[in-house]
Image (cartoon, rainbow, N blue to C red; front, top):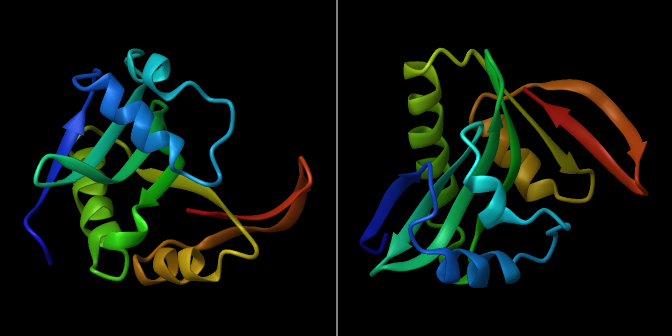
Length: 140
């Protein structure tokens, strides 16, 4: 694996890079990531390769859980274990801060993400459902 550094961002340190990185994500919605990160109940973990953002997990924190808003790894850095490394750092921090569960949704068509989440020990807690035209699975 290249020289990857995982960082936890609780406030925006590099908003232009974060916006540019987010703009490359093919499934992004209208969530203004940089504005949301300024709120204390939103957190982000990023992966940098030589100071360039190559991966991220963005989550909304509740009292005892975290809702993952997105996980993204740049195509050039996929299949290197980066998503696993991000999830490890993310879940370790959550455990240290009293968060007992992680929830996320994944598109039914995104088999590679589903396989990753199962490999990480997440479990399917809801069957596919129709939401905004997207069939999803909810994992915890």
